[in-house]
Image (cartoon, rainbow, N blue to C red; front, side, top):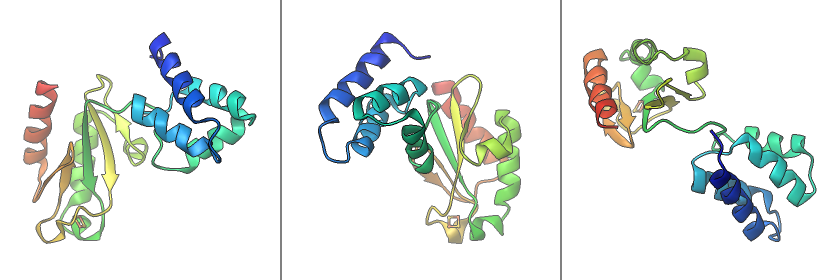
Length: 162
Ligand code: FES
């Protein structure tokens, strides 16, 4: 939920960067670094400051997969869906994860967060653990040979600690 502090952060980042050449991307990076995502309210502020349309700013935000328009969960799980992991059951693991977390698989393919905000699930395409697949990363720590039970244990522990 956006707050006055969020607004102030957006305005500070915009004010500090708007005079740079090609200011839009540095501003977007600055806001995501500060807030963890690009809130909808930032689009209007940026558009006004750079004399762009909201559609132009929104187009750039959605073009780059790096930018998020929703806050991430307190834990981030990335399940590898690349070929070697797929051949070792990654799609079953993915389906299990979506069911356990109560997130829509289609939505999760772009990143989806549980209702309680504790976990964001997203795909990744190779974690360098192909020989010990299927693999996932939980808060950037990689785990090999992950099955449904391992997933439940890892994510359950992380959720209870969050
Ligand atoms: S394909 Fe999954 S770790 Fe390489």
